[in-house]
Image (cartoon, rainbow, N blue to C red; front, side, top):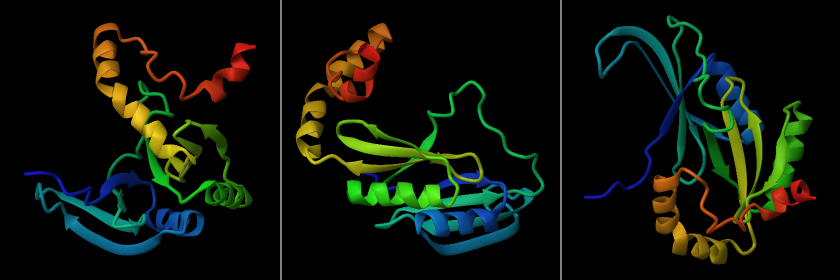
Length: 182
């Protein structure tokens, strides 16, 4: 018995139409499905909703719920906004840079490119306040992933005991933190 893959990931949105149009325009996703009911199928409670599904590529589906009878959504104020995010992989650095320019041309503030060694990322927010990441693989991605794989259990064990960042993979963000050292 084993999970095959993620069927879809669902988040809340303020406005289903605005959200679909934003993802189609800015991330080039296809709008694939809409479901709407006046009652929740699983709980049977009366609660009208619009549930929209977007194709995030290769069988990955991103979904949103608009819930018009509920108070406007917020975020967990105890969790920094950089923590919860949706990350999408793009083909390469050229594609990442093209998306960065495209998003900025559409008036979206973009943070990065951030060098994570294994991959390189840009960050921005959708109209609902969800943080998004686009990540392009590094040219030496597999060799770096192999290095990380070799130390993952040791790192986890050390973290569980100390709650301090183990130094097994401190090479990953060396380029990002280099300017802070001087």
